Image 1 (cartoon, rainbow, N blue to C red):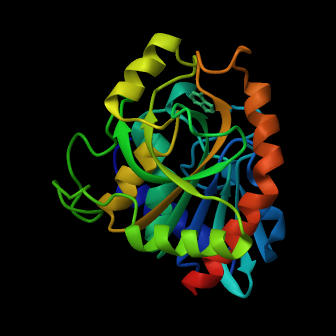
Image 2 (image 1 turned 135 degrees about the vertical axis):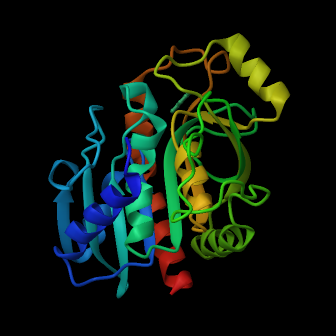
Length: 274
Ligand code: HPA
């Protein structure tokens, strides 16, 4: 995709004409985690297919809508669903929505996902804050010519997931009286789940969680100077840990069971950000 900047400007302009709200906070909802979008008041829902140049999700469970509305009176942009590299999209396409959110004026991005738990202390269904990531996807969305209008050629990733936002999320979880661990998220391309040997290797590398999204979006957000909070739902224990084979159905089911808690946490984070 060339002229990404012009395309992002066009898409952001299209969205701006559909609502008077100008959100500074955006939230991406991962597999089975879409419920929060239903809580928005006065919302405009725009199908990904309507937005110029937007990629369209092909995965069941990712309905593919951008919903803009109010949460506790605060304007937020919510992506219900995302596209993944394993669907055949380039990392530029995968991260295009984040470029658009940035052009819309978003300064804080909350990325949620379904992940496999590698750290044996993690329990199925729990939420985990992403403290850092390991990009094991073999791709980087900012490789190739750099467009300075988005951000600089080289940029720091030493605090990719904002310590300030993590502290805010911890406060929210304490108020809701649930445990919120932190962990390192390792991204793979997918769509095959990992082998037990890969999971042992990833554990040795320092990963607590494994998934097929988020990292590309985080890189692009940091390129644009957007602050990132990452939240994983441990939808399953990683390959070789749990006895049953891994399945997309299990990921979706566990995601649905955790949706309410995640929605509460997101609301509380938005209130604390305002
Ligand atoms: N591996 C990779 N991605 C995932 C997993 C997993 O175990 N669970 C949910 N997304």
